[in-house]
Length: 303
Image 1 (cartoon, rainbow, N blue to C red):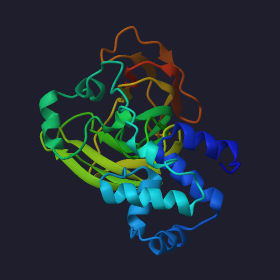
Image 2: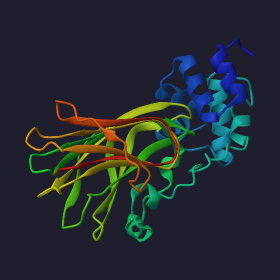
Image 3: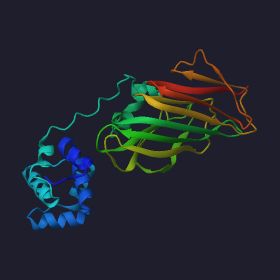
Image 4: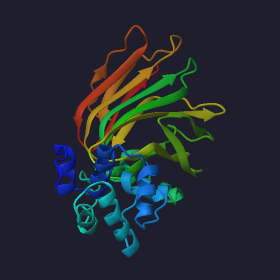
C-alpha cells in the first residue's frame, strides 16, 4: 500500500466510511467533479449529489451498484482493493444513546406532555445526537417589564456522523394570546415550525449549513421575539436533557425597570433560591459549569 498520511491510513483502517472517503479525496486533491469523471471512465456512473452525501455521511452506500461504485472509487483514489468497501460492509456504529440523564422533554420545557402533540413531524429526540458544549442565552426586558427578545448562542458537538439540525423550543411565561416568532438565525436556517395554540409553545427546526462528523463542533445562534405585545416576564430558564459543559443565562433590564431582587434556581421548583446581584448596568446572570440534566434558571421580583 502506498504510504498515506497517518490520518488517512487510520481512517481507512478504522472508519467510518464517510471520514475515510473524505480524507482520501482530500489527499488526492480531487474535486468531486474530477472524481466523478474518473469513475465514469471506469464504468461507474454516480451523481455528484450521491458522492457528496457519501462524503458528508448523509447517506451510506447500499446495494450492488453502490458497492461496485465504491470499488471503482478506491481505484481512482489510489487505495488498495476493499479499503473502502470493507468499511461499507462493516456494521455501522449504533446511534448515540438518547438522553442519558432520563429527563423528559416536557420536564425540561416546563410543559405538559399533551402540549408536545402539536410537534408532529419534528424529531423530538433529534437533539440527543448532539452534545452541548456551551449555552449563552440573553433576555432583553423593556421599560414595561416585558420580554422583548431572547437570544441564544450554542456550541455543540456531533455525537455521530451526519447530524445537521437542532430543534429549539420556546414559550412565553404566561398565556394571553402572545405569539412567539423566530426573528433571526445565524449559521442555521429555519425548517419545520410547529405551534401549540393553547400553551403558545413553538418548536422550530434549525438546519445547519452542513452535516457534522462525529466529534466535530458547530457554533450557531437564533433569536425569538413576539408578534404584537410581548408578555411581562419574571424569569429566564433553560432545560437540558443531557449534560452541558457550560450554561450562561443573562437578563438585561431597561434602566426604567430594574427588579428589586434576582434569584437563581435549579430545578423546576424554585425553592432555596440564592440571591443574585444586579449590576449597575442593569444586568444579572447565572453561570453553570458541568451542568447535569435538569432545569436551570433565574427569576426576579419587580416590587
